[in-house]
Image 1 (tube, rainbow, N blue to C red):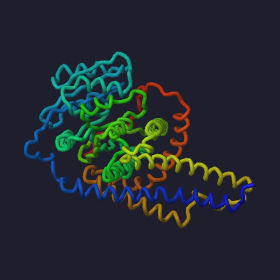
Image 2 (tube, helix red, strand yellow; image 1 turned 60 degrees about the vertical axis):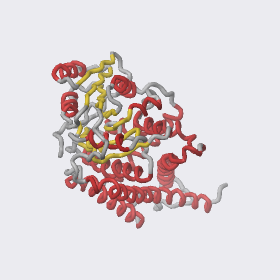
Image 3 (tube, rainbow, N blue to C red; image 1 turned 90 degrees about the vertical axis):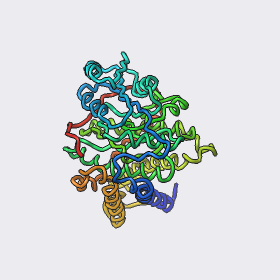
Length: 428
């Protein structure tokens, strides 16, 4: 039999990992995000558009909008896209076999807007192939890809294109999505997520050199770089994560631009949120398994940090489930190496550090994204509860997703109409 002292030490190791890993990552995100702000954001904070340098000019942009059952959102989304202040652009809306009136809405808009072109795919092909169809027909090398419910900021394209003009090795620039629907508890909590988690992580990762993923809802691409890597993969559930890794593995740079704003709708039901986060988790694991061999490739050392973080996050989720399961079992059956009061989840003195780190993280994120999203202060009370919600959702979806990816059969990723929550006027 395994001695109780060994099992107790192993238990303490898991408890320590569960506690210190999120604490360490929170500190890393805060430090990286602050560094990014002072290096990249502070100097341009008051600028409406980035100034051009000698010899630079605003080159043309193609705005790609793949649509599947977007009849309710298409008019608003395309109207915003057509109203961007950029000097030379076109809008390409791709109807990907929609079952509603999306195609009719798009064609009616195209009749009165010469900058709008409509591509119709008779059968649903999935977002990856819809984007590729739009990219192949685009007149310009710079592509700005948004979702069918996203509302572009008037000067978003300027901030995207700046990176392509100034840095020839830049293949993609991801923007800064902001939540529109904030009337429900889930909506308010996700406002905190996109500030203190998504925005902060992207700043930190960019400060350390590489991004885990661009935002599928708002990203600019250099078409020649996409062509080099074979465009988006149609069999990946999260084409945005996959294309990010494909580009970076081929030596291209991927950047984050916080001033490239877009306003989006998010799920406001538990069912809708679960389906979205499970898909995200499964897509992340697909990318992890597809790229894990980079750990044995000396030429891919620039991506080792991201891969190790992905592996540790997976181990953290399963460690949490293991520890929690053992503790629950100890309430009903004798477990020699622990007592029922040695709970991994009940508050104790270590909780002070986690709560303090969370409050600091939210305060920093409130300061950073408060420059672009003036409604954050109203949601701060809800934001401070987000870590519990975030860890729980990530934990459950990670545990559920990994075996599905590991043992499931990979096939074409098709569209599924998401829960977009309650519509609300654009917040500014």
